[in-house]
Image (cartoon, rainbow, N blue to C red):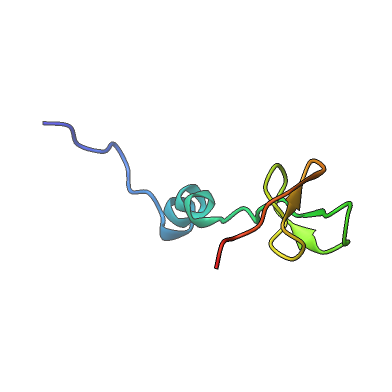
Length: 59
């Protein structure tokens, strides 16, 4: 059975675990048509356009 050779302090243990919980914010770009913030490579929800094409929802 594996047994640790010496005690690992709480500070060292917590330093090792800290990077696991860091969240990365998603990249946000500006819509070239309306200027609203939107996710890259996705349709703008404000003006419903992507790459010069307009998408309309049928209601």
